[in-house]
Structures are given as C-alpha cells and as structure tokens.
Image (cartoon, rainbow, N blue to C red; front, top):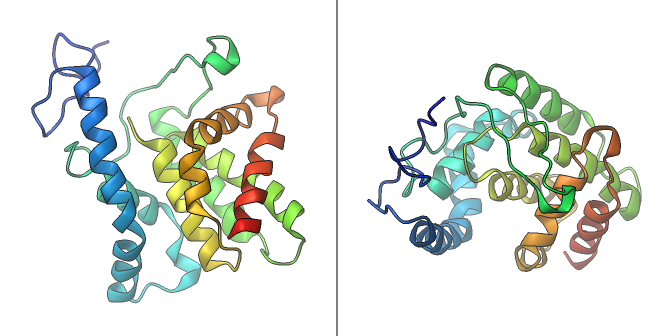
Amino acid sequence: MRDPYLLEGTSVLENLLGIRDADALQRAEADITSIRLFTVDAAIQSADAGQQVPKAQAFGMSRLLAIHKHVFGDIYKWAGTIRTIPMEKGEMILGGDTIRYSLPDDIERDCATALGKLNGTKWGAAGVSETALDFAMSIAALWQVHPFREGNTRTVVTFATQFAEAHGFHMDKTLLKDRAAYVRDALVKASDGQYSEYGHLAKIMEDAIRRG
C-alpha cells in the first residue's frame, strides 16, 4: 500500500516547502516548529478566550488538533487532521520493535478514552511524585494513539504542559525540550503494552513539575 503522505517515489513527506530531500526537510521542520512551539501557548489560549471555551471542555480532541495545526501548518497541508493510514516505527530502545499505535478507525475513540481519563482525574489532590506518575500514565496513553502522521510527540507534550498549567502544576518546558530524545524514549517505554515501564517518564515529569 502506497503511503499517501509521501512524495511519490520517495520516502520524503509531501510538504508545502517543496523539499524533496529527507535531511533538508528534517532541518527545515526543526527550525520552523521551534518558532511555532514558542507561540503555541498564547495562540491556543487566545482561541479559547475568543470562543469562550470553559475549562471543563478545553482539553479535548479539538485542542490536540489545534496544537498540531499551529505547530505544523506551515509545513504540511494535512496538519491538524487525523492520519488515515496505519503506522509502524521501529524503535531502537525496543530492539527494533514498534509500539502498537491505534488504527485509523480507532483514533477518535482511543483519544476520547485517554482524554476522558485525563480530564476525569482530580489533579492536585496528591503529592508531586504521585501526580507525576499518574500524569505520565495518562499522557503515555494519549501518545500511544499517535493520531497524526508526523509530530505526535511535540503535539502531545505541548498538550501536556498546557493541561498541567491549567490544572495547577506548572511544568518546566525548557527541561522537556532540552531532553526531548529522553522524553520520547520514555514515552515509548511507557507505551509497550504488558511490558510498559513508567518510571523514566514519571521521573522527568516530576523533575519538570518541581522545577516549574
């Protein structure tokens, strides 16, 4: 099955920049998204205020899509839309195995389940360590859905920091950005089915909360 997200005859994602080299696209994407990530919090907050979105409804699928659209909209025409094909990614930390990401038809349901648990938790009732572990488990469940063809980690981590800010436990975003590779590996380990391990993800989230 041909991947409709790729430029025909290549392994490069179709993009609005006209780039046909994978390394060049990766560099351009990193440069553009770093700027967009700097402005995403203000943009989403402004949109919520303009639409008078109540806090109880603010952290749903629409926010996840809006974050992705803001961060990647200058690069991919499909930014802010749910992927339409199954995904596999060999992970070095899993010896080349892949996480079982949600199938396209299950993405909205699985996101709703993960977001329902996240929004249904009474945050602030526990200590920092317990909060970090509970938050790590909830965010890992959302990340495992992998609703987008590209940019899932940046989108979900941004969603997580915005959620934490709104629920009384600010997180140090600089720490998460500086340790981006560690965060992604920790998300992988926390999404490995019966072998899931949450300690590494909980640890960096606890550090981010304490530094926040």
